[in-house]
Image (cartoon, rainbow, N blue to C red; front, side, top):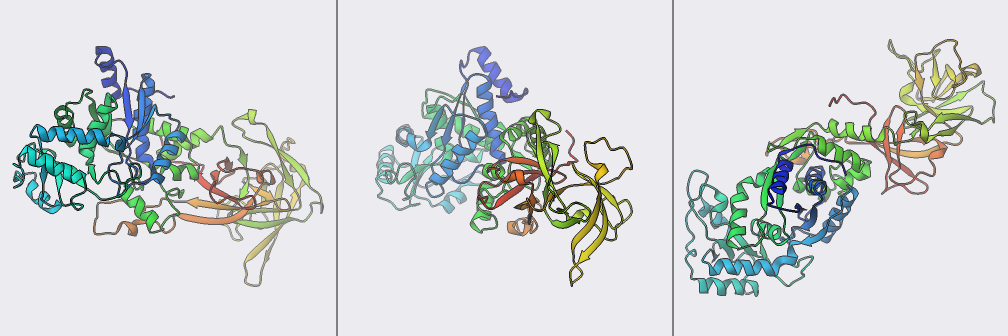
Length: 548
């Protein structure tokens, strides 16, 4: 596995190993199974698994499944698939719900120590009592219940004697603390909901801020790596570990989030796109989900390299999406076979080429990787070219095909446009051209020069294909809450064309990747492709203005 360059988290680990504080690094990747993973999660995955691998340590994949109302086994399965696809193997597969019995015991311990109490205030009242950043909170009228009463009420909460939301268990810390997270945070709430893992065994569920540190301690995690928004919760994290008398003491370390331009990183908003059918599911190739990027054709190597090239710091950062696209181009440059595909076809008849003749031309599969060998391309009297490669009345410095002009067909011959055929409505439906048999590619022809080279597909053996071209799904991301999120969706984020590919593409399989001459890198769509219907997703175009 690739190594991380130096960063402050890696430096902490090195110091802890050298000092003898730890003899093994143990990390965890702890997603909540309430949605699909996105590119932002990839940073946490690469950090947690990558750093542990670098130090011959261990990483747990742990599902923080403490909220049954939002979680589903579908998300559990998708997360496991994404982590494996990115190239990582977990040492242990864990669920927070497996520790519910232990968490309940630790909550009872807090009650016995006088550090937790059952509160009857509802959510709005708790919020009102909490105070503000400039004003201290007020103590709940139920804060001074006796230990015996709290133990009885908490057990009755567990036994299902109260309705959802009727009571909560709160930590007793400090309602005047300058850190609002320490103003008697809620530890448990009542929720009569079936859990994907524990069924109906429980009707009380721990809050994330209580469960997470306990999970880390139970699993022997040494370094609990999380994003910067949890920095204010670190005092509570440490309080839970200490007051629950956990034997193992993990260290929470925060790093800045990874954001991309024109990219949604909110699971809530991504779920909205799915639920309202703006996109074709969580794996829509326009989505920044790992499954969407996989379907579009991004490679795990390119994502890992991209993440490692973005700085690990304490500050959130927004990176240009072109940086990610740069790394997928670099990864595919030597791997992807070259081929020709015509996305918006225009028929060309080469009038002086022998009727019925099929000629097989040689072409390198990948000129940048000669070891990939060569392929055979059929050529005949009728071919398809791109509509964009012909103009009847071209501007100056237009070097492609127009009446009277000559261009080279890639891997083939020079052709010259002699006649334009139109239908009754004036639409161009066919070009009639002539070719020069002396100009065959690879024969060393040194006569006249042409300035344009265009691609093509032989018509008789062409394989029909669907091409999907993508633009950013979101035109802009802003904090303007008055503007609906869905108003920012790009109506032109998907363009679908029907054209042709070379006949040797007929046998290609889902997830096969190719570079189409001039169009970019494409992936065979794994969801919609059938034996009789090829679908290609454009991963990225060929050129980028991005500079490392």
